[in-house]
Length: 294
Image 1 (cartoon, rainbow, N blue to C red):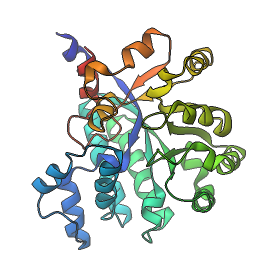
Image 2 (cartoon, rainbow, N blue to C red):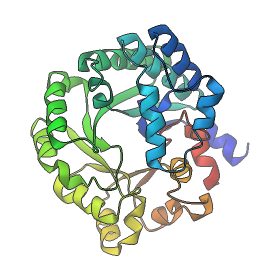
Image 3 (spheres, helix red, strand yellow):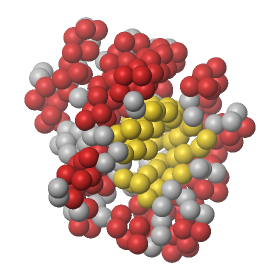
Image 4 (cartoon, one colour):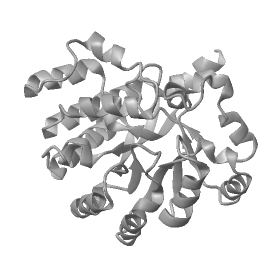
């Protein structure tokens, strides 16, 4: 058994995955047809070609176009169940999934509809596949603080179904400080706190996530290496970074896997996990995420 085969056989945890980013083209087309929704692609092959994005924003444009076909509880169930089946193939035994309710509520989909479909899939994954899971609700940082407050209010009746709140979407120009008050209220409500920071954004965003949002872990955080004081703090506080190497490559955060700093982060004592981020996109599956580091 070689190293890759060994890793493929090992049980794994996935701590950084966007459920909307697990949407396979074939399922997207099937749900679009079921719901009679037009999408800006004529075939599965066109979608696959569109996945040749070059930065975070061009990726998000495709991401939101696909999410538009998700309308009913069954749609969200099918999306999550397809991901859990991939988890079983990759020997993932625990996953903590981000979901973006604003992507759906802004289109008129009820918050309860999103939660019901995802939670039912989580329950079935536990019972049928032996996979444990948690849901993390993310605020879209390109939207306003007011919109985030509205979403937090919608989430409160489902607090027992959601373990944490996070922050994702377009990072540059939308610092964590923009949402300091929202996260303070989320902490008061008893949610754990995570945030995307230091992927395309500067190390200052990681500082803000730590000091203003008071996060329990940082999602991405690879640019923390640019700030020695920040690195010392991450190490001293044993602050986890949920790193997504192949996603970083695909989004041109790094130009080559040989340039990726995950090995250096580990060698310096930073607590790092390897994750897929958006595994429906080429070469981003969980097991594949380990291969370039071997």
